Amino acid sequence: MTSPAASKVVHARAPGKINVFLKVGARLDDGYHDVATAYQAVSLAENVRASAADDFSVHFSGPIDTSDLVTDGSNLAIKAATLLARKTGYRGGVHLEIEKNVPIAGGMGGGSADAAATLLACDTLWGTELSREDLLELATQLGSDVPFAFTGGTAIGTGRGDQLSPALAKGQFQWVLALADFGMSTPEVYSELDRHRERHRQDIFPAQLQPQVDTNVLQALRAGDPHMLAEVLHNDLQAPALHLEPELAEVIELGEEHGALAGMVSGSGPTVAFLAADLDSALELQIVLSAARLRVVRAQGPVHGARIIGD
Ligand code: C5P
Image (tube, rainbow, N blue to C red):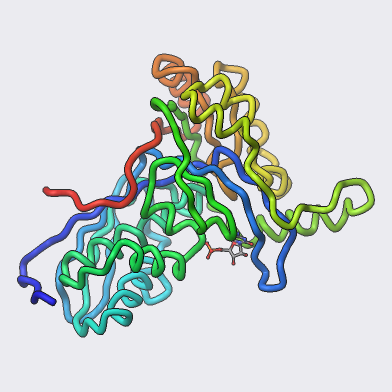
């Protein structure tokens, strides 16, 4: 282990994600659900700057309102840093400066990206030099989406979403994201799905225990064809998210009426992700949605997973 220089700042960046396909299996005894998802890392990213300190602290900045974020030990970035320190026996602490670009509680894995970038930044700052496999193992302990924020690109996630296998993808997909001015709790959206399934037990097929990603999704990603992908975008959490926040359905409709190939709730919401045919259509859609007073950002994917940035 090398001792960190007092003034050294390590900058790591990790991406937000869109689940272009998400099937949710039945609820398991531990409260989790087996999922089958296709993740795409997108160009909205979290920047974590880590500097040596005696204890653990975090400060947030960036274009989105971060005033409601907790900064104590329950924050996922602090959990990531303390977990790494525990695992490696590192006895110091860290101060984290996080520039947030991914919506908070928005269904795009912003907190997971903070955790993934923090693991990498601290490992570099502290010179603890864990292997990629060990860092991924810690990522898994921090949350279902943290391993993907670490690996990035395009990947299939099974189990809780944390068992990753890379997927072939060609080209870049253009996304327009409509951000909500409220957050949604992932456990609540999963619970709403369970309640819905319970209510309609008579009319719907029971949820599969081990769902699978539709092969058409893999084909569309491999072909790099947004038209093909638009046909097969799917999210089992969309119906419960819309049940909890019905106005999101109007947002989806608005985008689909104004040139989006398809729109859907991202992860557990409330961000709505629109897939555009190309950059020009994405720019046009961004203008239309902004004119309707929605908060809109563009992103493209796939992009890299967590990595160290030389400032
Ligand atoms: O893993 P993570 O902490 O991100 O999960 C947050 C919550 O989302 C879990 O407590 C659980 O309620 C729900 N969840 C789930 N099945 C998954 C992933 C998350 O039920 N595969």
